[in-house]
Length: 66
Figure 1 (cartoon, rainbow, N blue to C red):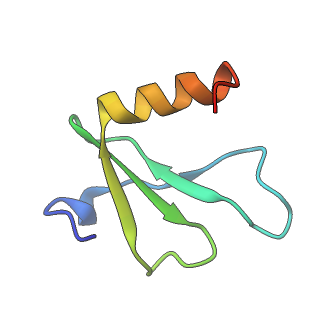
Figure 2: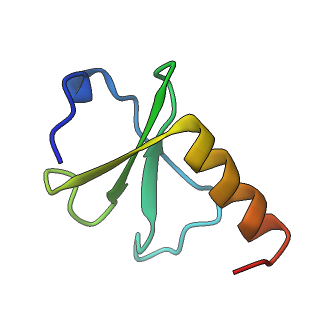
């Protein structure tokens, strides 16, 4: 998905990512959306979700409700 502000995303990878780089990168620097992409394919598709959706996802993972 192309987001109008995608060029402004500042990507970061988890410090827990594997040595092979098999993880996702997250861009959470914009006010209303979070970008998610495959770290092995940085020029590939980007999934964009609202901050509210991202927070719900992170809470669910942290509490193991998935």
